[in-house]
Structure formats: structure tokens, C-alpha cells
Image 1 (cartoon, rainbow, N blue to C red):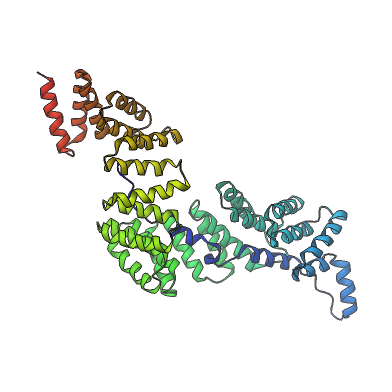
Image 2: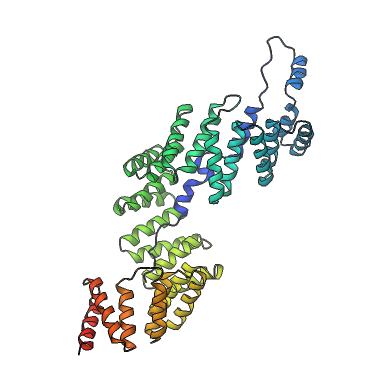
Length: 456
């Protein structure tokens, strides 16, 4: 029944995923695609200006619409597009422009509908597939991420019309960034395709490092992270990425100076502070880790990840009252969170507040009936309050969801022993001794003495 050790929160890696840090903005990219798609066909040499205007009106009926879009006059553009689409409902370019008008105003659901109509009208329209991919990716849940991947995988197989190598390369980069964890090989191939069209950027180097890390190629990832840091020593993303890699590899002495140097430049950076706390905790410096996390909590008092890490550190340092106060702060926002309830239950057990612990653990198993950790907590607290029959029920329920271990076997044995069911107690004491293998000397001494007593 150990509380999960503190570790750097997801925000450390999430920061590397942000649109701005990655060097692209979805709407800017969509705008560039729309402008490229709207370029008029060059006119013959010698054509007069009046002829050019007349020719453009004849060959480019959407020219005035797209001029209105350029001027951000979306009301006029929408009205003209509605009129045009009433006569040309399957015009893919107009449908794409209509989606862009909604996208630019933040009307993502309407934009999605128009982009989908554009794709239906012309399945090979590169621009609409990219726009949909970016729109789905911006929503952030797993179902939309899958839809984003599908759209972008389709887009990178197509060509912009007219040709636009920069837009094609950008689509490859977006795809690579989106799938770097779920499909590192596909991400690598997409990045390689992008680099065939446009020069490498520092963001590409960082992305290559992340792809290599996700693929399990630690040496290549480290090389790319260090290359990114050499190119920009002040890059907090590259520093955080390298530190994360080294921490995962348990190379704490290598990670610590990198993180500390970055913190001298940016002492308030939450991700770097979280990483330093994780390093110090792993090195057994719980008091130092606690101090760093208290500083971080002061910087970001509303961050659930930081508050949870501080609660973990306080628990491990033996500051149970502080840990309990922090967990209650989190539970006030999420009163039925099984993980938080488990954590508070373990604090109450450490404080010998067993009746309260049972109530908290029982709330956890209502929220998640297969919570084996909570059932273990209930069994232990029942044992300490001499509720041995209840303890057996808790242990029996736990056994449906988790394998027996030395701790659970010892609880079984002592419960049966206290209920004077000697045969069952002997069996579980023997199983406990076979599993313990010298790792629980106090309990093993007790088990041996009880076996001797029960044998008489």
C-alpha cells in the first residue's frame, strides 16, 4: 500500500506538444493554403489592366469573395459565398473558403461541416484535408486525434493546387508532430519528406529527438536534443526534453546539472522545477524535493499536477498533515476520484485513523469497484480495528482483481488466526513464508512462531 512516488507531471511533455512551440499555427497555415489555392491563372502577355480585371471576373468568380476574406470582412465573404454556392453547391474551392470564413471566426463546428463538404466534393483537395486535420487535432481528445491523423495521412499523399512546397512540407510536419508517439516510424517518414522540400529548422531537430525517444532510440534522441540545445542554448523545450530522457534512463547525475543550469536562466519555469524535484526525490533527497515543490506550488497554486506532486513529496517526507490538506484540496474539486481517495486513505492509515480510512477507501471502491489498492487498504484497516470477518470479505474481493502478494497473504493468515480458524491460518502462514523470502523479517518471525503455536 505504497503511495505513488513523485514524478514530473504530464505538463513537462505536453509543453513540447504546443502549437506555438512547434512553430506553426493552424489558422495561419490554413490561410496560406487558401491564398495559394485562390491564385488566378496568369494572363497572356500584353493584356491590358481593364482586360485583366474583366478576365479575372470571367475566370475567377471567387476573386471578390477572397478579397473580402483577405480584408477580414467575413460577413461580406459569407454572404457572397452563400450566393455563389446556391448556384454551385459542389464547388470544392468555394466550400473550402466557406469553411475558412467560419474557422477564422472560431466557429469550429461550422468550419468542420464546410471542410467535410469540400472533401466530399473533391476528395483530392489537399487544402481541405489539411484544414480538417488541424481542426480535429486542436480538439485534443483521442477520437478527434484519430480523425486528425486520417485527414493528414490523406493530405500528405496529395499535392496542393497550385503547387506549394512550403504548404506540403508544413502538412508533413504537422503529421509528424501529431503521430510521433503513436507511430514513430510514420512520424520519421513524414519529417524526412518535409525536409526534402524545405530546410531543417531548430523545431525539426527537436521533433526528430522526440520521435527517436518515442521509438526507443535513446542514443539518437540524446544526440538530437543536444544538437537542439547547441543551436539554441536557451531552448527550454530542448532542455526539458533532454532532461526527461535522462530521468527516464535514471541518469540523475547527468540530468541534474542540465536542469539546474536552465533554472538559473528561468527560475520560475514549472516544468523544469518539476523535473528537479523528481531528480532530487529519486536521489533520496526528499527534503530538498519538497522545498522545490513548495516553491513550484507557490508559482502555480491552481495546478492539480503540481499540488498532487507536492502531496506525494510531503507524504514521503512524513509531513502527513500537509499531505492530507493538499489531498483534501484536490478532492474538493474531484470528490470521487479513486486515485485521490486511495492516496488520502493511505495517509489516514499512516496517522492510525483507521475508521476514517475505511470510509475513504469504501468511497473509492464505489467509484471503481476493481480498485485492488483500495480493497487492500480496507483489509488492513479492518485488521487494525479487529473487524476480522469484514477483513476476509475485503481480501476476497481484492483477490478478484489482483494477484496475492506477501502483504495480502499475511493479512489472510492473521485474520483466520484471530477468528480461530487454525487450518486456514496455517495454510496462509505457510504461503506467506514461501512468498516473503526474507523480505519481511518481523512478519516472518511472527508467522513462524504462530505456526509453532498452532502445531501444538
